[in-house]
Amino acid sequence: MMNYTKLQLWERFQKYNTEFPEIDLAIDLSRMHVDDEFFEKMEPRMQKAFAEMDALEAGAIANPDEGRMVGHYWLRDASLAPTPEIRNEIESTYKKIKEFTSKVHTGAISGAGGKFKNYLLIGIGGSALGPQFVAHALGNPRKDKIKPFFFDNTDPDGMHRSLETIGNKLNRTLCIVISKSGGTKETRNGMLVAKAAYEKVGLEFGQHAIAITMASSELEKYAKAGKWLEIFPMWDWVGGRTSELSAVGLLPAALQGIEIDGILEGARKADKLTRVRNVKENPSALITLSWYISGNGNGDKNMVVLPYKDRLELFSKYLQQLIMESLGKSNDKDGKLVNQGISVFGNKGSTDQHSYIQQLRDGRDDFFATFIEVKTDGGEPILTEKESTSGDFLQGFFLGTRSALTEKNRESTTITIGNLNTRTVGILIAIYERSVGYYASLINVNAYNQPGVEAGKKAAETVITIQRKIISFLGANKNQPFTVEEIAKGINQKEDIETIYKICERFLENRNRQIKKAKKKNNYKSQYKMIS
Image (cartoon, rainbow, N blue to C red; front, side, top):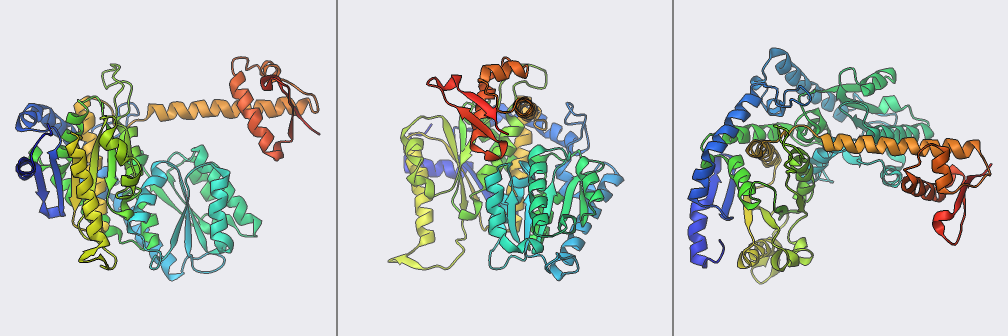
């Protein structure tokens, strides 16, 4: 494609850069391998994708694996919900978010030490990535009404660091525990670590905690028993990776002081445009087709997301889950083995011009870039060199990097927004959610299940079981040394010797387990024992 002169690129830009003034957004596909013949060829398949999306929004069972509807589009326009009951639930939850937030901000709901100054969000995956992205993109440390903190893993050191940063302000810190099923192990662990920290300083955890979960879940039961401050709903028709515009994302944003009406308004406006059945007038359709042509509909190329705005630094991480969990499937909807998906990487420009841009330009041609340009600089326009501001340099690096990639026949898409605000964040969320849905239709996969994630959880549970068996075995035979092979035989896990070795080695470094090691010349023949 790419061996064009600058004037030829200008001609392509005029033809394949599409502006959407209603949402202050433009999508430039001029540096992708698109042409009119490709759009014409894909027209019937895109019309099928449009029809499938219409059915999804109308309440069809779009996730047959779990027998569920998929309704994240209803969250920003409850009038589209297929039943009055669902519409009322959405509207009442939104009202409840605003009422609760107002009471927190005024101090009508407060902690043991007074008005809440922090929140500690405990979740994982979509229950944390969306809130983190929005908090980073729209927050202002000097103006935030409540400062955000996160437990987004089951790493004890990570949780300890957050608690250390909060310091003696736990009595003014609201815990937001998010788990759809209530059984997510990482979230449960984080909740129990937080609870222990509160109780250690004499605080009643329930007086500082709220839950976001499904009705009748284990978390809901736990929160009710502990007399937590409030419980907000999640629904089976909203997946974690598309839950940012539910209570999962809206409540933390509102507590932080972010104007959530703007996020919802942006998403609604984007949804309206992305329902248009003319491909060239539909931003999500254009994004979808750029993915398809670059990877030959097989995900042959990785997506490298490069936002030229520090506030969008976490957007690529958010997109990783949205795209990879939705599209990374071994089988299509007909049961055929396809091993589909698109790998997503990225951080931010111009930082990465000093790291992996070198490979993008001169290394393997196994990617397409997605540049995100924000026209409004923000900050103070200080001249740093002659007539140039730092924002001028940022644009220079963006345009220069794009040109450098084009010179080496490397594909790129550019998404341009006028300003970064609540509205445009809602727009970005909405257009990418729908792009994922359209692309899934083109490749015939279920975008709304996650069998690989469930397989990983089951494998982790097996390891946890082995850990417990080792502790029980060594505890029952205190001060007696055993090799890993002997332990494997003793706990009836004869094929899991490597796993047992890794577990025992970790136990050694954590003294609370009271495990000691008699080291042999061949380390794998070393013996482990639990001391009295």
